Length: 316
Image 1: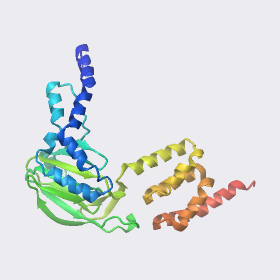
Image 2: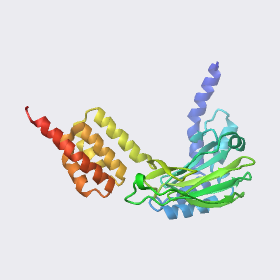
Image 3: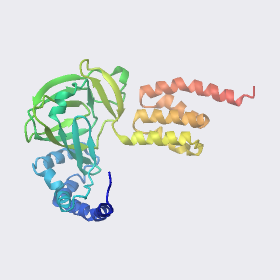
Image 4: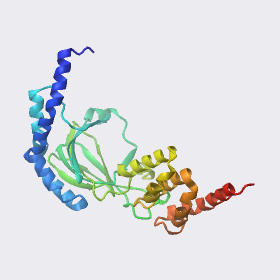
């Protein structure tokens, strides 16, 4: 597609002017009210959820959050609103507000796509608390499930199945709280598009999100609910591949992380990089790690590491 020089220049100018529009948006009453509401909730999930419910009780919240951006777009169609958008086969959405305690996103679930696509075979427990305002219910139902919260000794192999709860009919204007650490839900049977506004609470998240089979309730797979442990694993792997044996302190610190899965992932990378340096910490984890699976894995790995280190020291 050919873009004229004049259009290119206009795009550059629009980007240069975008900063002022973004500042106006963040200085607006709605944005400041949301920022203030969550200011003292960074580590308090229940309080953050309470504040989210208060904010989402306002039917005009979404409109007021982005009013300045809409004005800027009306004045200049080349203006690009700074909204993080997401799209899949079923939903289209955008993050309207983001702060350390919570994010607020709007989304549209397509009724036609729901009718066309095969029904989901799995359900995900996100591990996070969320508050949802149903703006347009679209005649949809909400299927619901329950699972035991993840405890300090959680083991996927021993996880109990999730169980279904009675579905509820969505209603326009309904505000509801969902604890994704023990509850999951799925919109179904929509007659028209479903529009929602969701506040996702960051504090108090479970270490893992879980995916279950809908028919049997069996746990299928787990993943990090927080992207920070995943980033840490990625960085440790980079250090290992780069041969940075001088970064032992980074691996040592990660083996003391709150998440048992990160502790063991860090130990695996450390052993692959510098088994001699990691051996003492491996022995500690075999004896005293808080999680039984980590203790077992470390105890099984310890004699293998010791044998290989002894063989490396032996001239024969």
